[in-house]
Image (tube, rainbow, N blue to C red):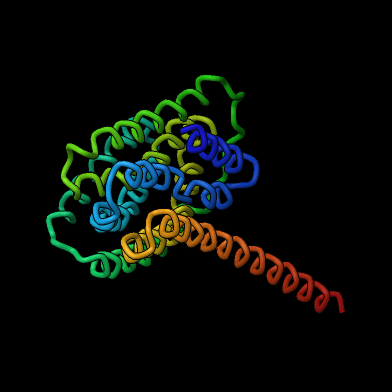
Length: 266
């Protein structure tokens, strides 16, 4: 639980200091889903987790719905709480509708990839916002992040023996980290800048899609330790690749700009 809270704090601090892209690369890691999967692996056989991954993938497929709805409301000037409530209600309704279909793991992945592709293109208009100067930090900020994530992760883990597998799958990919970041950052750096962080995280969560798929395919044959470790490595590797690509693009852009200035000088 402490590790989850630390990751949320790191993501918030990075977004304030280094910009929304790098904050998104931290917060789009499985800092909520990973520990929850670990708790489920301790309490349940691998076959249960294999079934959970199908529901998780379906829920993960519609996370961009939460992000886009929040971004639209934040850009329109709505506050943090109403924006969260509307975005979460829409996400939960869509996630429940998606779960009504009897997906296979691969079918859920094939459904999710186009959703992410369209959302990444649509969300580009939200990624250019500039953060406001954050106000002073307080212990309330830290406690808010810790309590929200800790309570939800603990509640889902405790209730999992009494819930249907599909519902466990939905709750395992709840946008809990995103909601906690909104509650903390919306009033500190502004709604549009917070929306920029979340829309950047859609690209990072493609790694989550791949990680959940890998876990679903390997959890029974490889066992929980190897499968969950491989899933974590997949998500981290994807985000590192995105950071490297962004750095390479920035270097290329600076060189092209210098060349143009040099040509003009001649």
